[in-house]
Length: 143
Image (cartoon, rainbow, N blue to C red; front, top):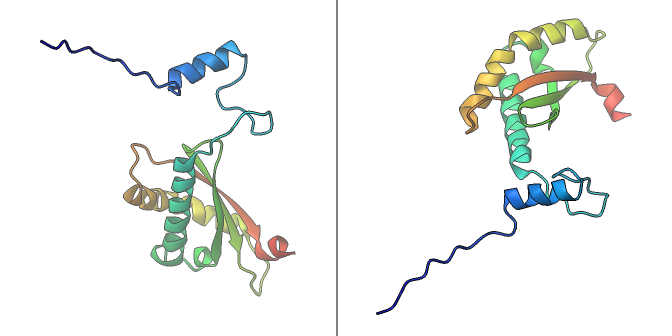
């Protein structure tokens, strides 16, 4: 009769072992890429930023129906400081009159709920990230 042995396989790269090693060597678990340790980029956060970029671009161009917001171009979406909070950089297209940034920020605050709802409809996460905006004039960015 054969006896079955229970073999427990441990992953040497488990989260607990990495955290313990980081504590033992007095360094944070996410090390700086320049200090000699390998750094693995967070592809899920990058994926979220890319999805948010696409959704916000489409929503500002079509669903808002606001001529002030339709004059905006999404330049980038970045985590600030992590995926729970996104910073959206927008470019304001040059027009005949000087840009009124107070009006643009006021309109963005009015549609913030619509933008977050559009993001929530497209991503698969428990919580929708908070969003903040930075608006730059287009001619400053290109020069």
